[in-house]
Each structure stands twice: as C-alpha cells, then as structure tokens.
Amino acid sequence: MLFVGWEGVGLCSFLLIGFWYEMDTLMRPSWANSDAAKKAFIANRVGDFGFLIAAFLIFWHLGNSFQFDRVFEAAQTASPEIILAITLFLLVGVAGKSAQIPLYVWLPDAMAGPTPVSALIHAATMVTAGVYLVTRSAPLYALVPEAQHVVAMTGAITALFAATIAVGQYDIKKVLAYSTISQLGFMVAAVGMGAYVAGMFHLLTHAFFKALLFLAAGSVLLGLERGHHHAAHAHAHHDEKPKRKLTKKKEKETHRGAHDAHGEVFDPGDMRNMGGVRVTMPVTFWVYMIGTLALAGIPPFAGFWSKDEILLDASHHNQTIYWILTAAAFLTAFYMGRQIWMVFFGPPRTDAAAQAEESPRVMTSPLVILAVLSVAGGALNLPFQGFHNLGHWLEYTIGHVEALGLDLTVAGISTVLALIALFISWLIYGRVPLRKPEQADPLKALGPVFKGMESKWMVDEIYQALFITPYVKISEFLADVIDWRFWHDFVHDTVIAGTYNWISDNFLNRTADQKGIHAFFNSWGSVTQGISAAMRRVQNGFVRSYALSVLLGVVLILGYLLLK
Image (cartoon, rainbow, N blue to C red; front, side, top):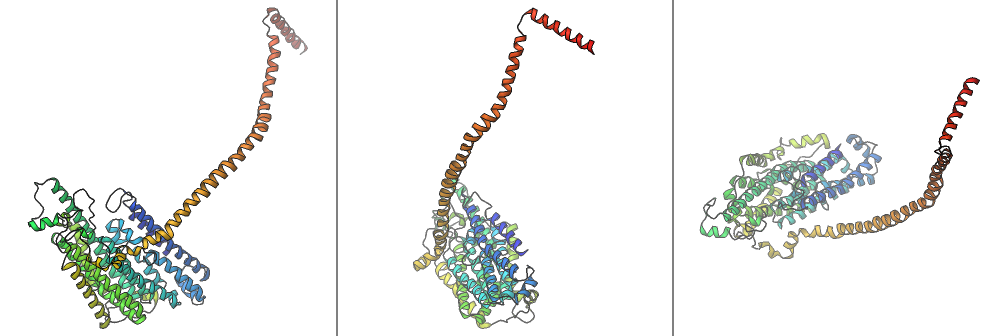
C-alpha cells in the first residue's frame, strides 16, 4: 500500500506540473511545461525502480510478506548483505522522490506547475515521502550502520550542494525550489543518522514555512503581473494617472527596465525585475519575512528548533556531517537574505514593481495562518522536559527514541552564523541595492564560482551529455536500423511481402484459384452451355415441331393415365 500511494502522488505531481502543458513558465506557447512534467516523471521512475527492487528483495528474503512487523522480525535473522542491499535500493527510491543527489534535477523544473501545487506537493507532502520511508524502515537501517552512513552523507551533501545553487538563482520560485532540496537534505541526513525525531520534526516545521514562502512568492508574482498590466496600460494611455505618486527621480528609475512594457517578454518571477515591493505589498512582505527567518533558523521561529536539533544530533554522530550541514545552514540564511533585499527593498527596478498590488484577502489570509504556524510550530517538539510530544508519537513506529535537550553551543553557533549570513547579504544587496534589471550581480566578482552556482554547476548539461543525448542517438539508430531498415524494408517488404507474393502467384493463383475454384465454376458453366445447346435444338421456331411436341405430350399423359 505504501508503494501504491507512492506512485499515486507521483502521478498527481506529473499531471499538475504539466497543467499548462502548451506553455512555458511565462505563458508563451511552448512545450517547456510538458517537458518539465516528463522530466519529473522519468526521474521519479528511476528512483521507483530502486524502490521496487527493494520490495522484491524484501518479499523473497524476509518472510514472503510485505507486512512491516513480519519483515522487521525476519530481518533479525537475515543476511547482513541482503539487508544492506535492501536499504541501499530503498535509498534510490528516496533520492528520486525526495530530490536527493543524483536524482534531484526534476524538482526545480517542477516549478512550472501552479504555485499552490509547489506549496503543497513539491514542498510539504510528496517530496517528504522519502524521509517517511527511511523513518518507517528504521529497524532495517539499524541493522546496517553502513547504509545509515550512506543515507546521512547523501542528505548532507545534497543540502550543501543545493544551497550553493540557490545562491546563484534569480527566479524567486527556483530559489525556493533549491532551498527545498537543501532542506530535504537536512531531513535525510537526520534520519540517516538515526535522529528520526529531529528529521520528522523538521519535516513538519518545514511544511509550515516553506508552504508560506511558496504561497507568498505566488502573491508577489500576482502583484507583479498586475503591476505590469497597469504599466502597459499607462504606456498606452499617457493621460491616465499613475497608481501612486512618484518623485521625478524614482519615476525615472522605474522606467529604466528594459524588460518592462515595451514589447519584450516580462518575467514576473525574475527578482531583478522587482525591488521595493514591501511598499505596495506590506502583508506579503511581513509574512515572507517571517518565513525567511524561520527558514534561516533564527530563534524563536519554528525552523530554529528543528534545524538546531538536527545539528545537535550531527555534532554527536559525525563531525563531518555536522560541519557540512552548518555550512548549508549558513548559505540558507544568505540566499534568503539576498532574496529579501532583491525583492522587497531598494527602489523599484521596473514599472511593474512600482505599481504592484497587494493580493486580495482570500490569498493573504492563509499566509497569515501559515506565518503563525511558522512562529509557533516549534512548540510541537521543544527541547525541554515534557515537550517531546513528537518523540512519543514516533515510539509506536521506531521504538524508544532519545530526546536531546537544548545545546547552547550548537544553537549559538548556528544562530550567529545565520545572523552573519543575513548581515553579509545586506552588505551586498541591501546597503547598495540594484537599481536596474540589467545591472550586474555583485556576486559575479566571485568569477567561476558564481558562474557555477548560476549555471547550477552544469549538472543538467552533464546529464544531457552523458544520458539523454546518447539515449536519443541510440533510439534514433535503433529506429532507423532496426525499425525502418530491418523491420520495415527487410522483414516487412522483403520477407513477409515477398513470401506472400510468391505463395499468391505460385499456389493460390495458379493452383487454388485457376485449377480449383475457376475450374469448378467453369465446369458448371460448360454443363449449362451443353444443356442450353440441347434445348436450343428443340426451340427451332417451326410450328410443326411445336405441334408434334404437343401431340407427344398428350400421348404420354394419356398413356400414363391408362397404365395407372
């Protein structure tokens, strides 16, 4: 049943990513969104293949059953090599569904779907299924520490790797997408270390503030689209009053954007087209700020408590993983600070940003609710005596859980680093804000490092070169050689068609048709012709012949009657 639900949410994801299947993210006619849906579907099928192999191994070697309790009982006496293989194949499924290295590439493209889909499925529910799978399979992983270490390192490396990519992105939803991959890495690392409470705790708190951030990003997109519409309308009707009064200096600055309403395609999701949005969208700004602080791990927001618990477990389990996650947490605070300064602060860099509108209450009310949960969600599992409610809930699944208290050293280091990262982001993007969409990003001074972040470390291009292009070439070769030349030209046209023509000409036509069917019906025709020729002699047209025939007929009838 777990696998059925696993596949079901994957199908829902595929259908929702391709919702606008004939458009791209800018609503232009294109198959880009459809391609993104196929990419997600294929990447998840690769992971699901590993999950399916693990399921087969479980059935064959662990009691011929899929019941968790029976499987866990049989695993106690099973070969360690079999358990290791099962857990590693399960990790392949986790990497596909929870967007871990190397199968994470589908999640950023999944942002092609509607924003509520990103908030629900691709931030809070479906993508966390892998974390749940590892937690539910905890008794198996406990038997093979090697697999636990592989899971933990996979999550930690994914967290840091995705965080570096998020630093170089300009699309507001792509930043959040790579942030989601990074935070999923935190969760996977936690459950890989055996810190199941910390991993599930972060799963819950992350659902609150990441759903908030995605929906708030959708609010920003809507506001920018409305502002762009008003700006385009204003350019067409110069006599209309602007939505808000601007000084001549600011008005001049807002007209500098080359991407604005002058015929070029305007991207409302590009953070370079924003700036100063906090003035026109105050509610969205404040809830976005709350989500940012929660994601950055600033106390007392929910993200601080769950992230700190993961870092504390990592400091006890493996120092390498601890410092990798700490670096990822630092970059998380930095790229979220960068996003805040680029989107909400500084002068409006386009007319659309200057005339953006706050979203209606029906959209902002859920944001306020999620903002409250992003602040108070940490109460689900505070690191104090009597507040470990989540641990008690998990005991029914994984047995006894160890609850760690608050470590001021670990918490202090993570908080100070987060504040430093926010301060650095202000120095770069807040103190001297960007004023034009085409203005170079200050981080370009890092040279190849930032180029790698901006290009997502060329992973998509590498996959294209290593897997997709060879696969396409092989498919084209097979289609040309096997399908067309061999099957169509040789098998179909030469073998099948030639054999049929030979049989038709030499047997069916000459023997069966000419000597059989035709001869049979022609013989009946000959008989009919003979009878007709005989009858034609009687029907000669002479009256005396007809009179003689009548006389003979009368004689025969009378003879018959007399003899009878």
